Image (tube, rainbow, N blue to C red; front, side, top):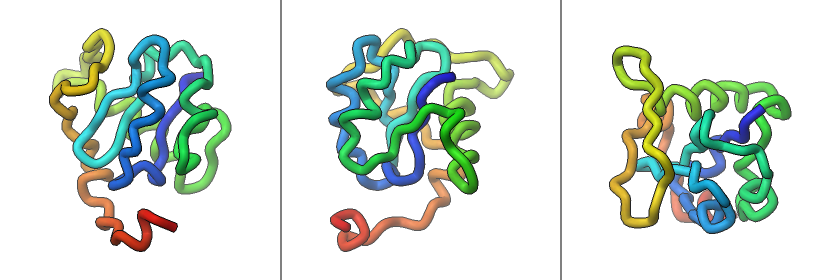
Length: 115
């Protein structure tokens, strides 16, 4: 079961998770990071280093967080339903387009980001 990134990452985008990923499967979006569902080798390094506790194995999430299983998956499919396999993210790459749910997510204030 791959790892996913949940809503705690939206508008935070600390990015430290990308430094621990041995296969560069964490991609920067416009408002959050996403884990590629096929490239992830499920090592858990990113989960252990995330400062906002946004990363979980997909089979460990429940409630409203379950939507982020699909969100992390869906951003890597094109309009024809074909999986996009970029082959690894590098700092400086253009951000991928956010999932519509993330785009529409209420913006966090500075205070919400700090707490």
